[in-house]
Image 1 (cartoon, rainbow, N blue to C red):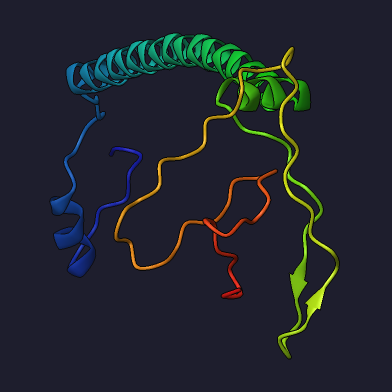
Image 2 (cartoon, rainbow, N blue to C red; image 1 turned 180 degrees about the vertical axis):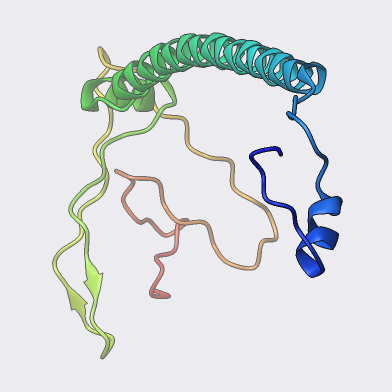
Length: 162
C-alpha cells in the first residue's frame, strides 16, 4: 500500500480535478514578463531623462531671453529718465519756442477770479530765438488775443470789449 489514504465519494471527485504528481511551473512566461517589465522601465527612464533635458534647455534659453529683455528694459528706462529730467524738458521746450508761464489765475465756482494773472515771460536772447507770434486767423469770429508783452491799443481790442 502506498502512504496515501484512498479517497471515496465526493473527496475522490474533487481530487480528480487537481492534477496528480509533482507540479512544475512553466518558466518561459515568467521570464518574458520580467524582461518586458525591465525593458519598459528602462525605456520609461530614457523618455523621462530626455524630457527633463529638453526642459532644462528650454529653461536655459528662457533665462537668457529674460536677461536680455531686462537689460533692454533698463536701457529704455534710463532713456526715459534722461528725457524726463527737468533740465532736459526745459531745453527741449526752449528749442520748440516755448516760454515759462506766468502766475495763473483761477476761477471759483461762483465765477470770481482768484489770484492775479501775469503774462508768460519772454525768452532771453541768449537762451532761445525770439518767440514768433502765431498767425492770426482772419474771420474766425473773435478778435485775436494780444501776444504776451503787448499792450492793448485802439487797434487791438481787449477781451472785455473796451
